[in-house]
Image (cartoon, rainbow, N blue to C red; front, side, top):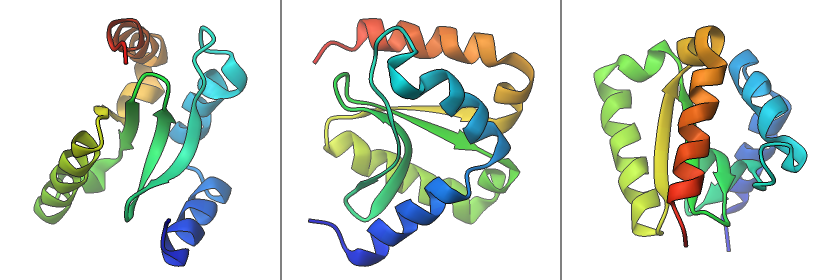
Length: 118
């Protein structure tokens, strides 16, 4: 069971997706991405993952410039380690990658989906 605050945070994040999240979601949603099912802004423990393919145990995180700050680097590391304890592989992409090379990002994701058999 999740805390109400985590559930509410996930709902808010779904309503207020970044431009890059919307762009990637338009590719991943509704089984359009090679029939792999993704969900967005998914609570896992006390955290909210950007995109999750539960069938392949893969989490996709999109990072903006604020993730380069020391406090956020440590927080992201802690989140990723927690997700790994739950059996997930975490893929991180910079927003810049989504803006300039969405096809390349999708290639990396697809490769991991094919290789990460649960």
